[in-house]
Length: 147
Image 1 (cartoon, rainbow, N blue to C red):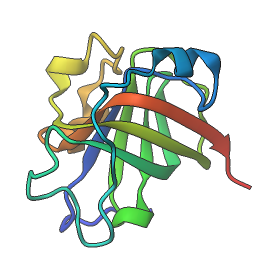
Image 2 (cartoon, rainbow, N blue to C red; image 1 turned 30 degrees about the vertical axis):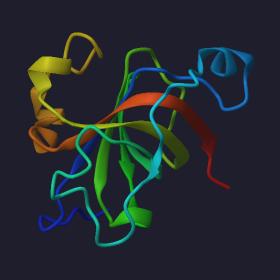
Image 3 (tube, helix red, strand yellow; image 1 turned 180 degrees about the vertical axis):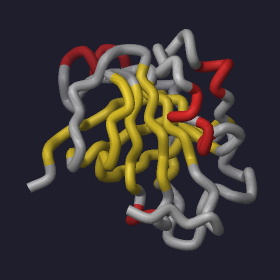
């Protein structure tokens, strides 16, 4: 997959990982949780900063697994961006899995997340994402193989 320099990259952090519809997720839901906005459509690449602090949902295909807690999604459906997904706990994902994550858009810095999300010690895996938008999960993560 080619990543275009003209489109900013995003980083996604999953802090709460549960399958949709399970009792654990239902119990964890909070009626006062912020409203979820759909991810931006084609041409709306989170680049103007207006999504910072906003909860959104994105779906993409896993194109690279870095560690048990970090992988890269292809978000062709929302503008051909690469998005780094981080999770506080290990995820059972593989290349070509379709993943849906809900989270709050923030800005990524390797040092800030390295310990909490067990990032690979080689910073080079994440260098292309430093300073770019990412999501801190506020909802559920659905993982399934593409078919």
